[in-house]
Image (tube, rainbow, N blue to C red; front, top):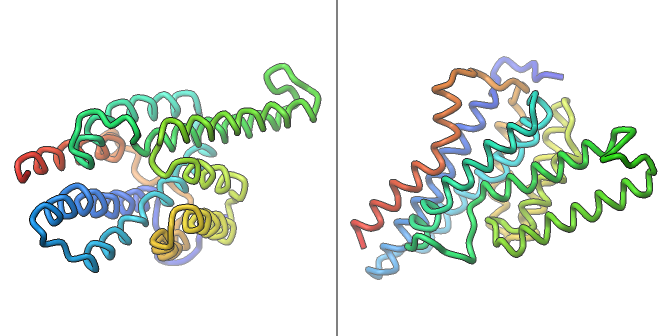
Length: 250
C-alpha cells in the first residue's frame, strides 16, 4: 500500500538523505576529527553532534537494500554491482578515514550490504519447494542457519563496517518487510534499535529518519542512468576526495 499523503518521498529522495548524512559523517571523521586532534582544536560536542547526523545514513541504506531486493528483476546482477562497488571503494575508504591505502582490520560498508543481500537472498530462496535440491523442511532450515552463521563469521573476520550488527539489521528488516507504511516503520525502527543496542547510543539518532520513511511512497523515482551512476559511485568518489584533502591538510 502506497503512502497517500500529499507530500511523498521516493527511494531517490531517501538515497539523497543518506548521501548527505553519510557525507557529513565522513567529513567529520576523516577531516575534522583528524585535523582537530592533530592541532588540539577539536570541539567534542560539535563532533558528537555531527557524528550523530552521520548515524542516520546506514539504516537508510539497509532499508533501501531490502526494498531493492524485493523490486529488482535480477538479484544476481544486484549482487555483482555491490561486489564491484565494494572493491572500488576499499582503498578510498582506508585512505580517507584512516590515512593508509590498506587497513586490514577495517572494511567498507558496501561489503556489509553485500553480505546482508546474500543472506536475505538465501532466506528468500529457501521458501521455494526445492531449495538447492533440498525438499526436507528441517534440512532447509539447517542449511539456512549454516549460511547465516557463515555470513556472520565472514562479517566478523573481514571487520566490515558495523560488523555483524549491520548484517543482522539487514536480515531483520527483510524479515519485517511489508508494503504498508506501518510495516516499513516497524522494520526501520527495529533495525535502528538493534544498531543502538549493538553499536552504542549515538545510533539512536537514526530514529529521526522514521519521519522521511513515513512519507516514502514505495517508488524508486527517476531511473535515468545519470541518476543511477551518481548515487552508485558517489561513495568511492567522495571518499577519494576526502583522502586528497586529508593528505593536503596533514
